[in-house]
Image (cartoon, one colour):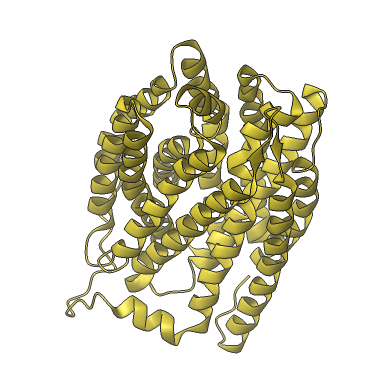
Amino acid sequence: MKKERNIIILLASINFTHIIDFVIIMPLGPQLMRKMLISPQQFGLIVSVYTISAAISGFLCSFFADKFDRKKIILLAYFVFLIGTLLCGLARTYEVLLVARIVAGLGGGILTSQVNAVIGDLIPYERRGKAMGMLGMAFSLASIIGVPLGLFLGNHWSWEFAFYFIVVIGIIIFPLIWLILPNIDTHLTDEKYNPFAILDSVLKDKSQQLGLCLMASVMMGSFMIIPFVSPYMVANVGFKETDLTYIYLVGGLATLFSSPYVGKMSDKIGKFKVLRFVILISIFPILVITNLAEVHLYTALIISSIFFIFISARHAPANAIISNLTPSHLRGSYMSLISSTQNLTAGVASLLTGFIVVKNTNGQLLYYNYAGFIAIFFAFVCVYVAYLLKQELIKSNHFSE
């Protein structure tokens, strides 16, 4: 169990760095929009291009993910991710920053899928919700430590120091991957490898198709809102840019406790039940945060923290369910397709919100509530898809809570 725990901590550390890299761009949004003179639409593209790039790399990875030792794939992807992040810090123009985000996304997309595949390979299903909850703590720690420190560096020096900070942490983690993570090659067989086997499997298995739809609806419901929380708080709610640190600090502390608890409850009372509950409850903070007017800092922090708790709570039960839809020899490829779907829909949602939200002459952002209504629609879609997936697993005698 100690070895299992150490591996989960290492995987969470990998997630920690590439999650910081993804989310740090959002609280830096007001600074980037001001210093690079970019519009909300251009900022939406900066956010979405990372996820679209990650979607492409995840899709391509699905054709070879189960041909190699997962440890080697993680090492290569982490190296690419660090190079891309370094280029982000060195960027001096909007165009160069876009290219750097693409490179970082290429590595990040592969990391997401392979980390989840390793959990699926090494952790039994009855403990997998807890393991996914611990991985979810990476987002919390990124919010508590990484984002506030990145914002501190960005506000006291300049935004690029936030990316240098991520690179330094990554340089420490890289050798630990080599030392701690075991070779994961039990999925390899002597049979001739078929790179298109996963596509054939998905086309024949309705539960795998529904798994992709489940992840797509989860991400659409989240990323219609998340990228513009920080710009909206500054433009409409009365936050100073330096106050944004508190959103991620308080929200991260809240999810640090809630994510493992949701994971444990998923294993205890059922992953489908917990997923349905947290999705339906999340509708209320979505509705409130996207219609928020100027309020006291403490009120806004309470609302944003509740929002982050229930948005992040979706992922532990959803990922645990999805990781059990394929056999081991196809898990890496399927999780790559899941990662691709996850990143593509997050990118599309961010880009869509970027086109919906506009800035008026007073600098306020308009129509953010429309993005909230779309997110609520996808919450109901997610509940329905989860129901269909559960029925399909029962019908095929593969259902397990």
